Image (cartoon, rainbow over all chains, first blue to last red; front, side, top):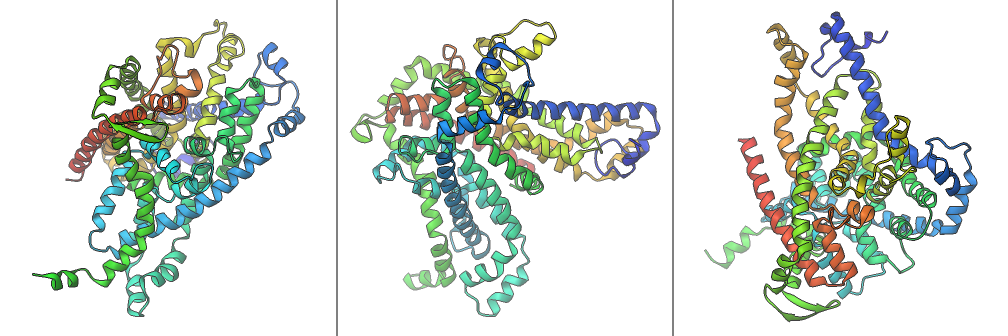
Length: 292
Length: 296
């Protein structure tokens, strides 16, 4: 029965003993219906984009309806070929892999030093990292681009790879995780004569699989979705990522359905990633920000 | 006190610590900290393309403050903040309370509410562009026509452009905040509800007197983070209406974009960045004060 499960309800203002009254039962059903409506609003734009992509532009313009009459996968294939999207996918993949590696290594090591070694004066670095959480790097993107230009690093993947290695949010996530590791293990390693680097590789890294996983997922998504910096650095180089291509494509004279197909291509990888790791992602999102 | 004691104070541990984090610090310096200083430097000069030419003091700022589009963008920022308080601040709280109170499909609702968060920003905006399309083919107009309502012009209505953009931002961002609030509600001790029930408090009273107060410290933080995020609004006005109609939706970041990518005027773009940074530093100082008083 619908109400049986409320006996095991753990949180929230409605308690199991409230369910004796008819009024609360109606409220519980209303809340469930509201949740369904919320889901419809949340998922509708994404679902609609997929559905509309199956239509030809003639059909799209002349026959305003939500659900297409037939599901024509050939249209996807032809837009994919016409756009040479494979190449953009490859480029994005290269950016993502490099970014993820540098996100893990550089942020992880900085957090290790800030949380475990704590050299004299580390608080200054920590303070600067915290401030960069509040002044988003995006605001000084132009100056950064000018600097990248001075170093002749435009039209190269290198700045994009390294940029995610300086992410204040990831440093904080790593730092909180390291601080909660059992101190005895680190002390024991010290007594065994292990150096700081050895302790990191042999003790900390094996214990940190869960946080590394969270950062990997977040940084895959961040690198895939980023548009501004890839556009400034890579536009016109032949190394355009999916997002850069999507931007120039939607501004061209492409038809609505073609643009929507490009949108679908660009959101399939993150959505797949999300469905595979939905548990880690939703938990990471809740706990990370709670403590940060 | 001399050189020797100073040397002793700085031990091997400190040296290794700094050596280990040096590469990361260099990255932070290059990608995050130095660009802020470079923005200030650039904004005080004129430049031809990427080459700095001469020092002009605050001339760029003077020019900026007299530029009607800048004043419009500054004004719009406050309109954005206003609407993001109306739409964006309460939505996650309400969503969190509603989803917490169900027991069926809860984990699916949690996943679903977060889904828009992982849709890339640019793709989100393009999708919503068609949602709010004008004429018969706009998706919301199609839905409204089922109810017999005439097609609306949506984003072309200057009164609606900013609220609709904030609606899109809320659609994308609310899920993350909702999950944070839900985690916080889960941490409330059930004994509190039971005590309230004995005192005769109904469900609405429990939400009002137990759940809401427990969310307030977090909400303060979320509020300032949300205001900070308003200063980063770029994709929405850029893709939807190029900041229009008539600059009605132009944001500060969009102005930076226009200076940099249309006029290739990097000093003016930097001056605008610096103005954004100064506003953000002031807001952050307020934020630190608020979170400090929370801890006390």
